[in-house]
Amino acid sequence: MESPLASFPLRLSCLAVVLTLTLACTGSSADVSPIDQQAIRKHLEKISANPHPPGSPAQVLVGDYLLSELKSYGAETQVDEFEPITPIGRLKMRNIWGIIPGKTDRIIILASHYDSKYFKDFRFVGANDPGSSAALVLELARLLVKNNPTDYTVWCTFFDGEEAIDEWTDLDSLYGSRRFVQMLESRNQLGKLAALFLFDLIGDSKLTLRRDGNSTPSLNDIIWTTGQEMGFGSIFVQGGTVVVDDHIPFARAGVPVVDLIDLDYPEWHTAADTVDKVSIENVATVGTVFLAALPKLAKALGSPPARRTTRPVRRVR
Ligand code: 1BN
Ligand code: ZN
Image (cartoon, rainbow, N blue to C red):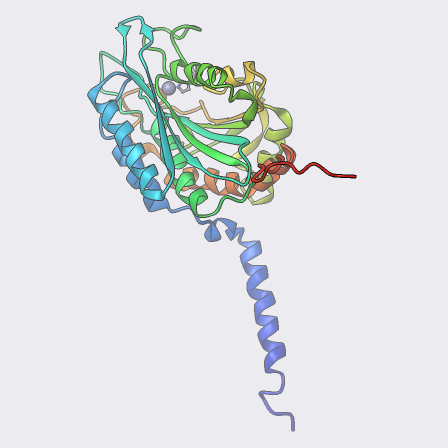
């Protein structure tokens, strides 16, 4: 008679196949995501503890928090201070970014704004706008320091002064991103920038992200197809929208851009945009999909030429 153990390896491999299929069928790709939802919650609570419009003491504290987190991950940090004229006078602002080295000096920017909109009549902490996206970009920085899956240098960037101080106009909005593009131009670094990926309002409990018409279609397609293939078609939905946000100064300068944003958020720019409205799971899903798409995005942007470490050698005939 055949020993009960004789078919053991076969049974084991059958079990492995069944387990793999079960995981695939339950769409649990997010289960293996490296994104730490507790970390996102911690960042969100810190960033959205108080109203923090540009120029306020609370915004200085939020900026200091971003800097100390980026440093704690091992990223080199940079700060650009500026003082634009706004409808309520000059305001001190800071753009902040963490640098994650790659094999080349060509740059991909992952970005969020980190100012909450100034409202004089009510308390606005901006948990989804911008807390959710600023928290995600911090978490992406932590993970990318450990493993940058591209050859690009990645800058995890936080823009100040995205919101209009009064009414949204070309001059009263996007203070930080307009300044950032000017800074890159003045440093002759704009040519090094391969793409900018912007996150904004990504924490609605009914999150629906539509391709933005001001973003680069081929890059949009990579992200939305990845999201749908991973089983998140209810978030990465078909259809389009057109958004003006921090990606526009970059798009105007000829940089490929994507804005991941859901403006269909009932609490948008109201006192009810508080931490309890943010779905940490949806924020994490956006991060999981973006991380899965990143190698494909980098490939689509072209392999950057390797940074020369030695002087070119002249061939002698
Ligand atoms: C995004 C988040 N925006 C402001 N907070 C930009 C925007 C302003 C988008 C007005 C649509 C209308
Ligand atoms: Zn806003």
